[in-house]
Image (tube, rainbow, N blue to C red; front, side, top):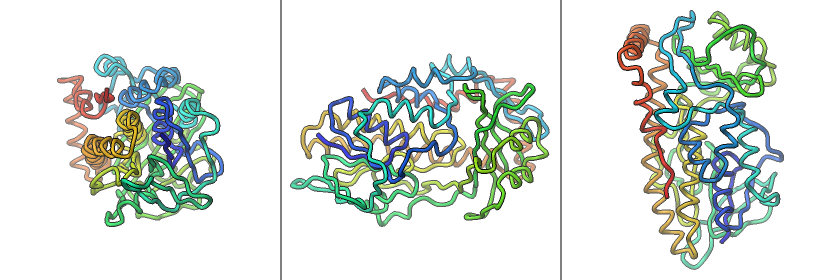
Length: 386
Protein backbone atom coordinates (compact mmCIF):
# COMPACT_ATOMS: atom_id res chain seq x y z
CA UNK A 1 0.00 0.00 0.00
CA UNK A 2 1.23 3.49 -0.83
CA UNK A 3 0.69 6.82 0.93
CA UNK A 4 1.63 10.35 -0.13
CA UNK A 5 1.88 12.84 2.73
CA UNK A 6 1.70 16.56 1.95
CA UNK A 7 3.71 18.61 4.45
CA UNK A 8 6.86 17.76 6.38
CA UNK A 9 5.77 19.12 9.76
CA UNK A 10 5.32 17.14 12.95
CA UNK A 11 2.00 15.61 11.94
CA UNK A 12 3.05 14.76 8.41
CA UNK A 13 6.33 13.16 9.43
CA UNK A 14 4.71 11.23 12.29
CA UNK A 15 1.98 9.87 9.99
CA UNK A 16 4.58 8.86 7.41
CA UNK A 17 6.72 7.18 10.07
CA UNK A 18 3.75 5.29 11.52
CA UNK A 19 2.70 3.93 8.13
CA UNK A 20 6.27 3.18 7.04
CA UNK A 21 6.81 1.12 10.20
CA UNK A 22 3.69 -0.88 9.29
CA UNK A 23 4.96 -1.72 5.82
CA UNK A 24 3.52 1.07 3.67
CA UNK A 25 5.49 2.76 0.92
CA UNK A 26 5.68 6.43 1.95
CA UNK A 27 6.41 9.65 0.07
CA UNK A 28 6.44 13.02 1.83
CA UNK A 29 6.20 16.09 -0.40
CA UNK A 30 7.13 19.49 0.96
CA UNK A 31 6.86 22.78 -0.91
CA UNK A 32 9.95 24.25 0.81
CA UNK A 33 13.24 23.66 -0.97
CA UNK A 34 14.89 22.84 2.36
CA UNK A 35 13.66 21.96 5.83
CA UNK A 36 14.10 24.79 8.30
CA UNK A 37 13.28 24.93 11.99
CA UNK A 38 10.34 27.28 11.53
CA UNK A 39 8.71 28.16 14.83
CA UNK A 40 11.79 28.13 17.10
CA UNK A 41 10.58 25.87 19.92
CA UNK A 42 7.71 23.80 21.26
CA UNK A 43 6.57 21.97 24.38
CA UNK A 44 6.00 18.24 23.96
CA UNK A 45 3.30 17.36 26.48
CA UNK A 46 2.64 13.90 27.97
CA UNK A 47 0.05 13.13 25.29
CA UNK A 48 2.55 14.05 22.57
CA UNK A 49 5.16 11.82 24.20
CA UNK A 50 2.69 8.91 24.23
CA UNK A 51 2.07 9.48 20.54
CA UNK A 52 5.81 9.42 19.92
CA UNK A 53 6.13 6.26 22.02
CA UNK A 54 4.00 4.41 19.47
CA UNK A 55 6.72 5.24 16.93
CA UNK A 56 9.57 4.29 19.28
CA UNK A 57 10.65 7.94 19.44
CA UNK A 58 9.40 9.10 22.82
CA UNK A 59 12.60 8.43 24.76
CA UNK A 60 14.70 10.32 22.20
CA UNK A 61 12.57 13.40 22.87
CA UNK A 62 12.59 12.88 26.65
CA UNK A 63 16.39 13.14 26.50
CA UNK A 64 15.97 16.73 25.33
CA UNK A 65 14.54 17.78 28.71
CA UNK A 66 16.41 20.70 30.26
CA UNK A 67 14.56 21.16 33.54
CA UNK A 68 12.06 19.30 35.73
CA UNK A 69 9.11 21.45 34.82
CA UNK A 70 8.80 23.67 37.90
CA UNK A 71 7.40 26.96 36.63
CA UNK A 72 5.34 29.96 37.68
CA UNK A 73 2.73 32.33 36.34
CA UNK A 74 3.60 35.95 37.19
CA UNK A 75 2.39 39.50 36.86
CA UNK A 76 4.50 41.98 34.86
CA UNK A 77 6.02 43.28 38.12
CA UNK A 78 7.30 39.75 38.88
CA UNK A 79 4.83 38.82 41.60
CA UNK A 80 3.92 35.13 41.43
CA UNK A 81 0.27 34.38 40.71
CA UNK A 82 0.60 30.60 40.93
CA UNK A 83 3.23 27.91 40.58
CA UNK A 84 3.36 24.48 38.98
CA UNK A 85 5.57 21.54 39.99
CA UNK A 86 7.03 19.23 37.37
CA UNK A 87 7.10 16.23 39.71
CA UNK A 88 3.35 16.64 40.33
CA UNK A 89 2.72 16.44 36.59
CA UNK A 90 4.86 13.31 36.33
CA UNK A 91 2.91 11.67 39.15
CA UNK A 92 -0.41 12.49 37.52
CA UNK A 93 0.36 11.96 33.83
CA UNK A 94 3.53 9.84 33.77
CA UNK A 95 5.63 12.53 32.10
CA UNK A 96 6.55 16.19 32.40
CA UNK A 97 6.32 18.67 29.54
CA UNK A 98 9.51 18.52 27.46
CA UNK A 99 10.59 21.87 25.98
CA UNK A 100 12.69 21.45 22.86
CA UNK A 101 13.64 23.17 19.65
CA UNK A 102 11.50 22.29 16.69
CA UNK A 103 14.66 21.26 14.85
CA UNK A 104 15.55 18.66 17.47
CA UNK A 105 12.12 17.01 17.37
CA UNK A 106 12.04 17.17 13.58
CA UNK A 107 15.40 15.37 13.46
CA UNK A 108 13.97 12.57 15.62
CA UNK A 109 11.02 12.12 13.26
CA UNK A 110 13.12 12.36 10.10
CA UNK A 111 15.33 9.60 11.49
CA UNK A 112 12.34 7.23 11.36
CA UNK A 113 11.93 7.56 7.58
CA UNK A 114 13.92 6.08 4.71
CA UNK A 115 16.20 8.71 3.13
CA UNK A 116 14.37 8.60 -0.22
CA UNK A 117 10.93 9.26 1.30
CA UNK A 118 11.24 13.05 1.30
CA UNK A 119 10.69 15.15 -1.83
CA UNK A 120 11.48 18.82 -1.27
CA UNK A 121 10.48 21.71 -3.49
CA UNK A 122 7.22 20.04 -4.56
CA UNK A 123 4.06 22.11 -4.05
CA UNK A 124 0.61 20.52 -3.96
CA UNK A 125 -1.88 22.39 -6.13
CA UNK A 126 -4.93 20.12 -5.96
CA UNK A 127 -6.24 16.65 -5.23
CA UNK A 128 -8.56 14.04 -6.71
CA UNK A 129 -10.13 12.06 -3.87
CA UNK A 130 -10.66 8.82 -5.77
CA UNK A 131 -13.54 6.36 -5.54
CA UNK A 132 -14.24 2.64 -5.56
CA UNK A 133 -12.70 2.31 -9.02
CA UNK A 134 -9.83 4.82 -8.86
CA UNK A 135 -7.04 5.73 -6.49
CA UNK A 136 -6.65 9.27 -5.17
CA UNK A 137 -4.24 11.54 -7.01
CA UNK A 138 -2.19 14.47 -5.75
CA UNK A 139 -1.79 17.26 -8.27
CA UNK A 140 1.52 19.12 -7.88
CA UNK A 141 3.54 21.75 -9.68
CA UNK A 142 5.61 18.91 -11.15
CA UNK A 143 4.26 15.40 -11.79
CA UNK A 144 1.01 14.03 -10.33
CA UNK A 145 1.29 11.35 -7.65
CA UNK A 146 -1.10 8.41 -7.30
CA UNK A 147 -1.44 6.52 -4.02
CA UNK A 148 -3.84 4.41 -1.98
CA UNK A 149 -4.03 7.19 0.61
CA UNK A 150 -3.16 10.89 0.60
CA UNK A 151 -2.59 12.76 3.87
CA UNK A 152 -3.05 16.53 3.95
CA UNK A 153 -0.71 17.87 6.63
CA UNK A 154 -0.01 21.15 4.87
CA UNK A 155 -0.72 23.56 7.70
CA UNK A 156 -3.15 26.31 8.59
CA UNK A 157 -3.36 27.59 5.00
CA UNK A 158 -3.84 24.08 3.63
CA UNK A 159 -4.36 23.95 -0.13
CA UNK A 160 -5.81 20.45 0.14
CA UNK A 161 -8.31 21.34 2.87
CA UNK A 162 -9.66 24.12 0.66
CA UNK A 163 -10.01 21.65 -2.21
CA UNK A 164 -11.70 19.00 -0.06
CA UNK A 165 -14.05 21.35 1.81
CA UNK A 166 -14.64 24.36 -0.46
CA UNK A 167 -17.84 25.17 1.41
CA UNK A 168 -15.97 25.64 4.71
CA UNK A 169 -14.75 29.12 5.61
CA UNK A 170 -11.42 27.89 6.98
CA UNK A 171 -9.52 29.35 9.93
CA UNK A 172 -10.34 32.82 11.23
CA UNK A 173 -8.14 35.40 12.94
CA UNK A 174 -8.09 34.87 16.71
CA UNK A 175 -7.37 38.50 17.60
CA UNK A 176 -3.85 37.60 18.78
CA UNK A 177 -0.49 38.09 17.15
CA UNK A 178 2.56 36.19 18.39
CA UNK A 179 6.36 36.37 18.44
CA UNK A 180 8.83 33.51 19.01
CA UNK A 181 12.58 33.48 19.45
CA UNK A 182 15.59 31.42 20.55
CA UNK A 183 18.22 33.34 22.53
CA UNK A 184 21.17 32.55 24.83
CA UNK A 185 20.09 31.93 28.43
CA UNK A 186 20.07 35.25 30.34
CA UNK A 187 22.32 35.70 33.39
CA UNK A 188 20.95 35.51 36.92
CA UNK A 189 18.27 33.39 38.53
CA UNK A 190 14.78 33.23 37.10
CA UNK A 191 11.87 30.83 37.15
CA UNK A 192 10.50 29.60 33.83
CA UNK A 193 6.87 30.10 33.02
CA UNK A 194 4.48 32.74 31.75
CA UNK A 195 3.83 36.34 32.69
CA UNK A 196 0.32 37.71 32.18
CA UNK A 197 -0.32 41.40 31.70
CA UNK A 198 -3.12 43.55 30.33
CA UNK A 199 -4.04 41.37 27.38
CA UNK A 200 -0.43 40.29 26.91
CA UNK A 201 1.54 37.10 27.59
CA UNK A 202 5.29 36.45 27.67
CA UNK A 203 6.68 32.93 28.15
CA UNK A 204 10.19 31.72 29.03
CA UNK A 205 11.36 28.11 28.64
CA UNK A 206 14.97 26.91 29.14
CA UNK A 207 16.33 24.42 26.60
CA UNK A 208 18.93 21.67 26.94
CA UNK A 209 21.39 23.42 24.59
CA UNK A 210 21.80 26.42 26.91
CA UNK A 211 19.38 28.66 25.09
CA UNK A 212 15.92 29.91 26.02
CA UNK A 213 12.79 29.56 23.94
CA UNK A 214 10.69 32.68 24.48
CA UNK A 215 7.33 33.63 23.08
CA UNK A 216 4.99 36.58 23.37
CA UNK A 217 1.40 37.30 22.38
CA UNK A 218 -0.71 40.44 22.29
CA UNK A 219 -3.87 41.79 20.71
CA UNK A 220 -3.38 43.40 17.30
CA UNK A 221 -5.15 44.16 14.05
CA UNK A 222 -4.71 41.28 11.61
CA UNK A 223 -1.99 41.82 9.04
CA UNK A 224 -0.12 44.49 11.00
CA UNK A 225 3.62 44.42 10.30
CA UNK A 226 6.45 46.01 12.26
CA UNK A 227 9.69 47.36 10.70
CA UNK A 228 11.76 46.25 13.72
CA UNK A 229 10.43 43.31 15.74
CA UNK A 230 12.84 43.86 18.62
CA UNK A 231 11.84 47.50 19.00
CA UNK A 232 8.19 46.50 18.95
CA UNK A 233 8.68 43.82 21.60
CA UNK A 234 10.61 46.19 23.85
CA UNK A 235 7.85 48.75 23.46
CA UNK A 236 5.28 46.21 24.63
CA UNK A 237 7.28 44.20 27.20
CA UNK A 238 10.46 46.19 27.96
CA UNK A 239 9.23 47.33 31.39
CA UNK A 240 8.35 43.83 32.59
CA UNK A 241 10.31 41.87 35.18
CA UNK A 242 13.73 40.21 34.76
CA UNK A 243 14.72 38.55 32.50
CA UNK A 244 12.14 39.56 29.90
CA UNK A 245 13.86 42.78 28.72
CA UNK A 246 17.23 40.98 28.66
CA UNK A 247 15.81 38.16 26.55
CA UNK A 248 14.31 40.55 24.01
CA UNK A 249 17.53 42.56 23.83
CA UNK A 250 19.58 39.39 23.22
CA UNK A 251 17.48 38.32 20.23
CA UNK A 252 18.85 38.66 16.74
CA UNK A 253 16.46 40.91 14.77
CA UNK A 254 16.26 38.39 11.95
CA UNK A 255 15.65 35.56 14.42
CA UNK A 256 12.36 36.89 15.82
CA UNK A 257 9.41 35.15 14.19
CA UNK A 258 6.14 37.05 14.01
CA UNK A 259 2.80 35.53 12.96
CA UNK A 260 -0.85 36.32 13.38
CA UNK A 261 -2.69 33.47 15.09
CA UNK A 262 -5.59 31.79 13.30
CA UNK A 263 -8.02 29.18 14.64
CA UNK A 264 -10.62 26.80 13.23
CA UNK A 265 -13.58 28.37 15.01
CA UNK A 266 -16.07 26.24 13.03
CA UNK A 267 -14.98 22.56 12.97
CA UNK A 268 -14.63 20.70 9.71
CA UNK A 269 -17.48 18.23 9.10
CA UNK A 270 -14.94 15.40 8.81
CA UNK A 271 -11.20 14.89 8.66
CA UNK A 272 -11.38 12.99 5.39
CA UNK A 273 -13.01 12.95 1.99
CA UNK A 274 -12.65 9.95 -0.24
CA UNK A 275 -9.21 8.47 0.38
CA UNK A 276 -7.71 11.78 1.55
CA UNK A 277 -7.18 12.45 5.28
CA UNK A 278 -6.56 15.83 6.91
CA UNK A 279 -4.57 16.33 10.11
CA UNK A 280 -2.81 18.90 12.29
CA UNK A 281 -3.30 22.62 11.68
CA UNK A 282 -4.91 21.84 8.34
CA UNK A 283 -7.75 20.19 10.29
CA UNK A 284 -7.94 22.10 13.58
CA UNK A 285 -5.73 25.17 13.79
CA UNK A 286 -5.82 26.50 17.35
CA UNK A 287 -4.35 29.31 19.44
CA UNK A 288 -1.09 28.46 21.26
CA UNK A 289 -2.46 28.96 24.78
CA UNK A 290 -2.76 25.23 25.53
CA UNK A 291 0.56 24.45 23.86
CA UNK A 292 -1.21 21.66 21.97
CA UNK A 293 -0.77 22.43 18.28
CA UNK A 294 2.09 20.01 17.59
CA UNK A 295 0.86 17.52 20.19
CA UNK A 296 -2.57 17.27 18.57
CA UNK A 297 -0.96 16.86 15.15
CA UNK A 298 1.03 13.90 16.46
CA UNK A 299 -2.11 12.45 18.07
CA UNK A 300 -3.84 12.69 14.69
CA UNK A 301 -0.89 11.08 12.94
CA UNK A 302 -0.49 7.99 15.10
CA UNK A 303 -4.27 7.47 15.28
CA UNK A 304 -4.49 7.63 11.50
CA UNK A 305 -1.56 5.21 11.09
CA UNK A 306 -2.97 2.72 13.60
CA UNK A 307 -6.42 2.68 11.95
CA UNK A 308 -5.40 2.73 8.30
CA UNK A 309 -2.30 0.53 8.36
CA UNK A 310 -4.12 -2.85 8.34
CA UNK A 311 -6.23 -1.86 5.29
CA UNK A 312 -5.66 -3.95 2.16
CA UNK A 313 -7.97 -2.21 -0.31
CA UNK A 314 -9.97 0.96 -0.89
CA UNK A 315 -13.04 -0.36 0.94
CA UNK A 316 -11.02 -1.02 4.11
CA UNK A 317 -9.35 2.39 3.83
CA UNK A 318 -12.79 4.02 3.64
CA UNK A 319 -13.88 2.26 6.84
CA UNK A 320 -10.64 3.22 8.61
CA UNK A 321 -10.94 6.88 7.58
CA UNK A 322 -14.52 7.04 8.83
CA UNK A 323 -13.29 5.77 12.21
CA UNK A 324 -10.46 8.31 12.13
CA UNK A 325 -12.90 11.19 11.61
CA UNK A 326 -15.23 9.84 14.29
CA UNK A 327 -12.38 9.82 16.82
CA UNK A 328 -10.52 12.97 15.90
CA UNK A 329 -13.15 15.56 14.88
CA UNK A 330 -14.64 15.84 18.40
CA UNK A 331 -11.17 15.82 19.96
CA UNK A 332 -9.85 18.52 17.63
CA UNK A 333 -12.91 20.74 18.07
CA UNK A 334 -12.67 20.41 21.86
CA UNK A 335 -8.99 21.41 21.87
CA UNK A 336 -9.72 24.47 19.70
CA UNK A 337 -12.47 25.57 22.11
CA UNK A 338 -10.37 24.97 25.22
CA UNK A 339 -7.42 26.88 23.78
CA UNK A 340 -9.67 29.77 22.79
CA UNK A 341 -11.20 29.96 26.28
CA UNK A 342 -7.78 29.85 27.92
CA UNK A 343 -6.59 32.63 25.63
CA UNK A 344 -9.58 34.75 26.60
CA UNK A 345 -8.73 34.16 30.26
CA UNK A 346 -4.98 34.74 30.11
CA UNK A 347 -5.12 37.71 27.74
CA UNK A 348 -8.13 39.57 29.05
CA UNK A 349 -7.79 43.34 28.82
CA UNK A 350 -10.27 43.88 31.66
CA UNK A 351 -8.49 44.84 34.88
CA UNK A 352 -11.33 43.59 37.13
CA UNK A 353 -11.40 40.24 35.33
CA UNK A 354 -7.60 39.94 35.50
CA UNK A 355 -7.60 40.74 39.22
CA UNK A 356 -10.34 38.18 39.86
CA UNK A 357 -8.49 35.59 37.78
CA UNK A 358 -5.23 36.14 39.66
CA UNK A 359 -6.90 36.02 43.08
CA UNK A 360 -8.76 32.86 42.16
CA UNK A 361 -5.60 31.14 40.98
CA UNK A 362 -3.67 32.10 44.11
CA UNK A 363 -6.48 30.80 46.33
CA UNK A 364 -6.85 27.59 44.33
CA UNK A 365 -3.11 26.99 44.52
CA UNK A 366 -3.25 27.13 48.33
CA UNK A 367 -6.47 25.19 48.85
CA UNK A 368 -6.27 22.63 46.02
CA UNK A 369 -2.60 22.55 44.88
CA UNK A 370 -3.20 20.18 41.96
CA UNK A 371 -6.33 21.92 40.64
CA UNK A 372 -4.56 23.20 37.52
CA UNK A 373 -3.33 19.67 36.76
CA UNK A 374 -6.81 18.24 37.19
CA UNK A 375 -8.07 20.77 34.66
CA UNK A 376 -5.50 19.41 32.19
CA UNK A 377 -6.82 15.84 32.40
CA UNK A 378 -8.98 16.10 29.25
CA UNK A 379 -6.04 17.56 27.36
CA UNK A 380 -3.01 15.43 28.24
CA UNK A 381 -4.47 12.18 29.63
CA UNK A 382 -5.12 10.94 26.06
CA UNK A 383 -4.01 7.40 25.23
CA UNK A 384 -3.11 6.13 21.73
CA UNK A 385 -5.52 3.70 20.05
CA UNK A 386 -4.61 0.06 20.48
